[in-house]
Length: 512
Image (cartoon, rainbow, N blue to C red; front, side, top):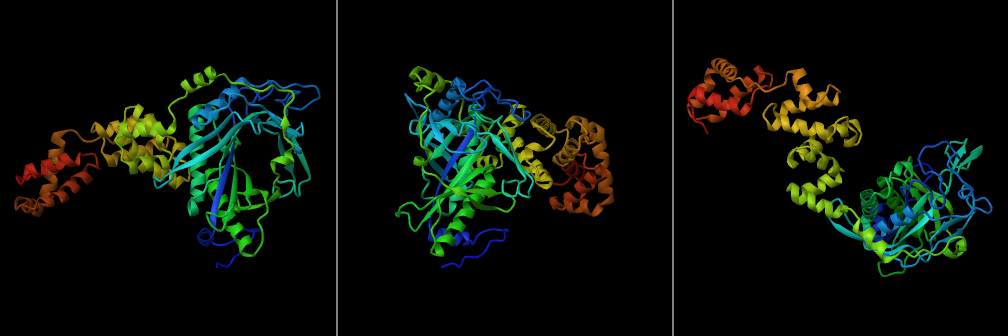
């Protein structure tokens, strides 16, 4: 049995090495993803949902929970919920209703959340994802339900930004009432040590789906998409499910993966020591890579759900559902398959493109006229290396699909060589203009004057008489020395292939 050791992160609990933990315990995970819907107004009132407004300027009696204020359901939010459900292959309810979920949060003005409980708008679906090595994985979706968001508390003072140690707290109700869809998976079993990878792949695939549907920008850094990560351990796959913890509001793919790994190691240490895992919510700390205890996790009965008396049940007509189904765009999985076939990429090439997040930018570059091979070469090669060196996303570089397509065109036309094109790209990234403008300004164009090339070749041959004799003797590879000399003399502006041809012609040696 592995010995639990304290993690390096300050304040962390005892941990078991991850590989040891997964060798001795079966990992079960579940994801609850909250998505802010891209509607102009809130779920139950007409207040704006625009991001970044001054605190408490986008509120109404409904979102403030004032007495006598009555909610009205946002039809667009309902339609977005149906779109998400259909894309996840869920069954859309013929009748669903809202309920009151009762619990106290200082930033929830009504002291209850209007949500859906046992009668969600969509249920029993799935999302197929692909892991980084190409392994397919199906994640079963239990339900997708509509609800409203809470407000936002800001804790002032103290070192952590949390309520403990703060001098005082401020509440902004602009977010209160913004439409949400919560997508809840069934327990994900059988992943073993790959559970963190499955969790990350699922959240990433879900974000891609939501963006394709046009229902949300799903920007995790703005809180538009947040994942609650559930983890439990059991001694074997045939044992009952273990007690789970729920790490709240994880807001990046990397953090989802790290949170699963940490909880597996932490819970294994608790169980190894003969303890019991506490069913609780936990907080994820991005800086230290650990989770800490939040509050004891409530069961459904503790929330005292009951039907919302101010809202009648919703009965989406089958005609409306089919109308929404007919309007669904091409979904990410189908789009990837189509593009791979059109571009002629191998499975490995396509997987690398997807894993690097380059699918959209390559598609846009091809649309600008570049060949699929050239688009992949530049985005996945030189630009990816530059982005890595600058520690930014490749799409954050100051170059776009139009410039890359233009650069590829310059190479294809023979106006610049590959080596010259890399220098052109440096100029574009430095803000010197478009590729064509950089070529002109830096004088990087390939020498196309045949007489100038012949002169350069003759001069190089005269300087290397022994090379000429070797070529005449059948050692064609010796031409490389003269080609190199010509390329140096022309500062790389000659076509190396044509230079080689001229060398062999002038020497009178073999042309192979």
